[in-house]
Amino acid sequence: MSASFIFFLSFIIIFSNHPAYADDHDHDDQTTARSTTQLVDRVCNKTSNYSLCVEALYADPRTPDADSYTLAYISFGLAYNTATNTRDQITDLLKNNATSDDLKRCLEDYNTAIEALGSGLNDLNSETFFTLPRYANTTSRSAEDCEAHYKSLVSTTIKFLCQICIVVANLFNGGDS
Image (cartoon, rainbow, N blue to C red; front, side):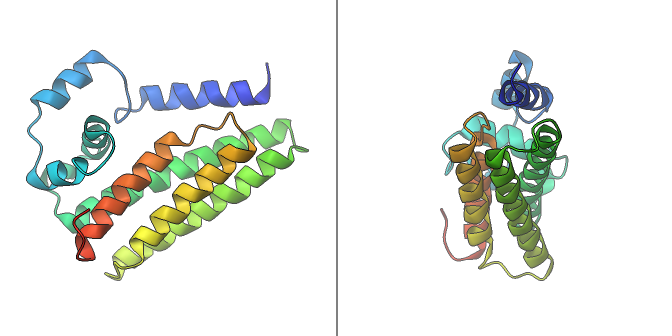
């Protein structure tokens, strides 16, 4: 089996078992039955996939009582954890294929993504909100760059989480989108 196939399979297994991304019918029923807060509803309505947004945010137990500030921590934290997990998988793939320039490029891309998201979380700590969309965009572009170099790395999850981050960040910046 190729390293790219193994990575793709690992990626699918990890995220299909993660409660925020699981594709089981009970979860779908819970989503439609779950009463979302007005804030989550407002945020998720501005994303490309309302149901996935709700599932991702409600994977964190703080979401039902979250204000904008807490929701920003949740969304940036989800993106940070996803980027970190992807980087760790890339590192594992490099152990088996140390000469892959494409994988090395992906590792650089995800290190950039993690650094950007870490800066975003630090800015949240200091209540500096205007830079948050830039950090989310940097992360999304890094994932796209990796995917362009190593086609089997699927970056839709991190890009979607960054979309949520941008919507939440715009709540602080006078934007409502």
